[in-house]
Structure formats: C-alpha cells, structure tokens
Image (cartoon, rainbow, N blue to C red; front, side, top):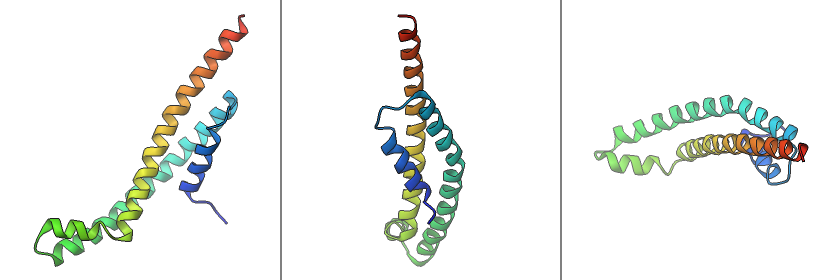
Length: 114
C-alpha cells in the first residue's frame, strides 16, 4: 500500500527526533524538499474543491458568513486544512533540518580541530 504524503512527513518527523548523522539529515532534507512540490499541488487541488463547495453554499444562503460556516464543516474543508497544515509542517521541517545540518557541520569542524 502506498503511503500518503502526510504519512511520509510524519515518519520523517519521528525520525528527526533521534540523533542523526549529517548524511541522514541531508537525505531527509532532500526527500522532504522533493515532496514539497507534491504538497503544493495537493493544497491547490483541495483549495479548488473547497472553493466550489463554498460557492455552492454562497449561492444557497442569503448571508455570506452563514455559508462560510456551513462550508467549514465539510470534508472538503478538512481536506484543505490537512493539506495546508502539511505544507506548513514541511516548511518548518525543512528550516529546522537546514539549521540542524549547519549545527552538525560546525560541531564536526570544531571537534576535527581539537
């Protein structure tokens, strides 16, 4: 069975909690960066689907805020939130991994000269 992007990100998230070598950090960083394009596609697709649902509710309701509230309790809105949260998580992980990689490189440099 194929894993979802969110499941892959969760696996990497669990893995980076351990002490990793710079090579493994770089591998994870590369893999998450490669997945990021797929995440953006997923956000775009779910946003389009949700906007169609919202439009349907806006056409049916007299008040826009009521239509918005009703549209936010749909599965399409939950899918959109999942996609945008995955995007945010991937960006944070990329940033954190870059910083961790720099720290590990500095650590190795300082221990090499001692």
